[in-house]
Amino acid sequence: MAARRKKRPLRPRTPSRVKKRTTKRRGVKARRLAPHQHPELIGLVLAALGVFLASLLYLGWEGGLVGEKLENGLRDLIGSAAHAAPIGLVAIGGLMLFRSALIDVKPFRVGLAVTLVGLLTTLGSRNGGFAGDALGGALAALLGGTGSFLVGLTALLAGALLLTGASAGALLRHSGHQLRR
Image (cartoon, rainbow, N blue to C red; front, side, top):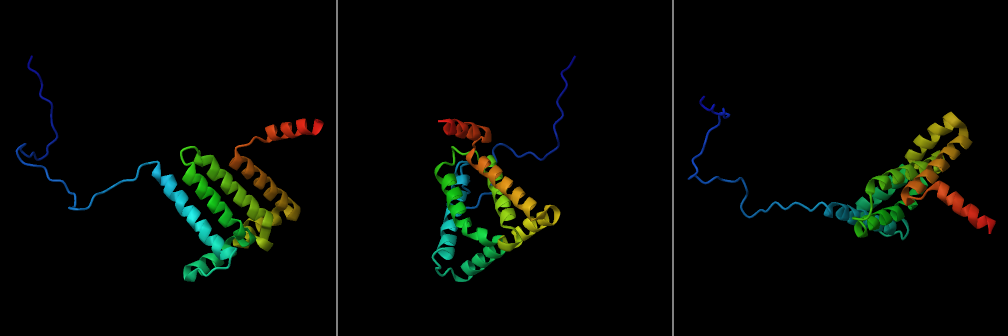
């Protein structure tokens, strides 16, 4: 029996003697970043933003139009927690910059988000800005002031455990051993 020929999709063919042209622009080289460089660059930007915010919030330096809008927007958004933002940004940026290969970023992001929600809920509508008013105010309407504070405190502790990678049981056992001494 004769061998069956494989059907090929119909497409125009160019002879092998014709050079194939590429669609590259002359003089422009497309260079992609290596995968390990992305967290380092993000960390560098976060650290620089934290230093800039620290100079505005702590030292009262002139930040220009952008600095003024950034400072006012941050204070309106998160209220008194704005003073913790530069420290957090520099810490996160430094960790990403110097230890980017050693850090698993996903639990760190979740821990940071839970800590921020807990802080804004604890500060509430008085000192938490728009976000604190939305989170703390809504919980205060549902659970009262005490319930809202307890939910915020629990979220702060859970976020701290997620950020540090510590175990609450291990911390309690260790502190119990120290108290017995």
